[in-house]
Length: 177
Image (cartoon, rainbow, N blue to C red; front, side, top):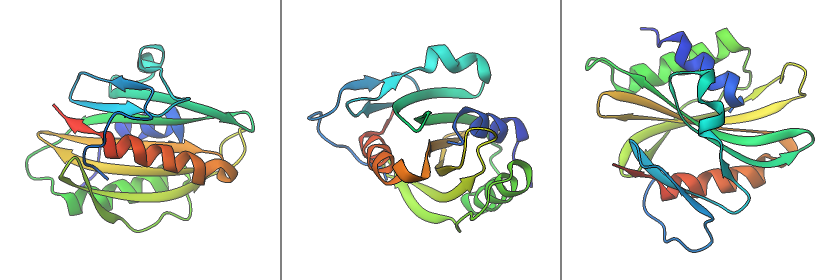
């Protein structure tokens, strides 16, 4: 089973870069409506309109602070799935495709989680950054309805712990529509 390469290519080109409700305090803006809504922490901006021409699969692109010349970002890719694809098959295919096709290394094994109460899994990895220096990424993958959602954080390694805290806040605020 192979995931559509275009979906994962867009995921990496854009950034490479759980669940439950959280109150609105200390959030700067709400993104959505669409298949989901989420809240962005202070310092993060919705750049979806400016980036959507990069891929028809892009549902969200959120730019954070700049670290060492690279803007930390979270992007959301939506890909159609067939009913026969389950979480285990998607987890295995996504991990292998990221490693083989895009040069990610130190890819973790999938970790089970949730996105707004629905099953999900995540994995972390490192990228060479193709002229931008080394990068770290974390992707949460969720099966929702007839789609697969990839929610990816990409940041500089030295800033990754701080940017990951913001990413997790975004995931905790997530709500499916």
